[in-house]
Amino acid sequence: MRFTSLVALAATAFAAEQGFNYGATFSDGTIKKQADFEREFNSAKNMAGHSFTSARLYTMIQGDTGGVIEAIPAAISTNTSLLLGLWASAGQQTFNNEVTQLGQAVAQYGSAFTDLVVGISVGSEDVYRTTDIGIASNAGTGASPDALIEYVAQVRLAVHDNSLFGKPIGHVDTYNVWTNTSYTQGLIYAVDFLGVDAYPYYENTKSNSIDNAQSIFFADLDAVTAVAAGKPVWITETGWPISGPTENQAVASVQNAETYYKDVACSLFSENVNTWWFTLQDQQPVAPAVIFGLAGAGTPPPTTPLYDVSC
Ligand SMILES: *[C@@H]1O[C@H](CO)[C@@H](O)[C@H](O)[C@H]1NC(C)=O
Ligand SMILES: *[C@@H]1O[C@H](CO)[C@@H](O)[C@H](O)[C@H]1NC(C)=O
Image 1 (cartoon, helix red, strand yellow):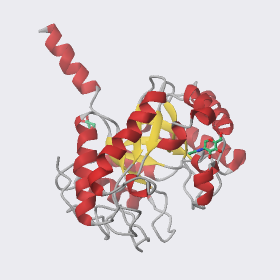
Image 2: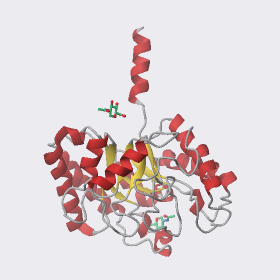
Image 3: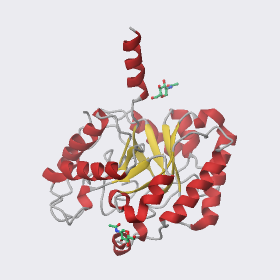
Image 4: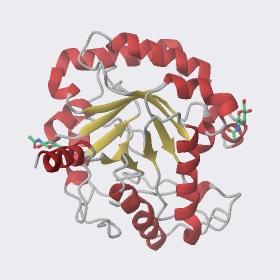
């Protein structure tokens, strides 16, 4: 009996996060307000076929006010868990403001906020943007592993005396950055979790047809797990576009996006891996060149997805 209840407890403790990535702006650069985040979080939660109840953010700063990002009160009002993000590629001064708003969020919202936090990511693909591949892709300004190690230490210090203390502090980067251990070993030692972004669609030096996409993705994940020094590996971004250019053998289509979701998302969910899918909606109000959003365009994001998201 006691054994049974312990097993039940363990199962509860391992209930993994399932959510989407949420940028601070719409695709035309308009800054999202609290009501916009609330519409998105509610649509994700009420999505026909699968409920997504977690949000990964990229910044703590609300662009139009400089205060706490309004995704925080929206997460509280919709009971959405949070993988917080602090932008780490704009230098120390901007990072200081990220840390200030992290502390401000605790002061302003207290445990209603901190109870929802599942982790804090220092940066997003910052190291990737310093690599040859990132530079060739014009990915923008990045940050070195050494700079990120310093930022992680600053966040640890900032939360040591508030109720975010003990929340995992990590970093998000592309799978091939994490496995480039001559560059990233120190960063791996510095973090509590490794967030992995991996897109077989973009891995255009491989035979990346949709038929191979599942095996490419899980090979990427296994390779990171092998260098993770036993630390948790979370999937912070993956997905397959519904439209966009063909990348080697990878064809963007609604059908292939569904296949990828069934092969990858459903496997991750069944294995209880924390997963933030890319993405709920990236085509509002203007369609980007490559579209991943499974909700389709519209306000609020439609809750009838473009393809079946049940598992
Ligand atoms: C909030 O979400 C968590 C996790 O999904 C759930 O356990 C809890 O019951 C929810 N709380 C409310 C008030 O709905
Ligand atoms: C690996 O790290 C080196 C720096 O040590 C960098 O020059 C190179 O571009 C990286 N390769 C990849 C695939 O990230």
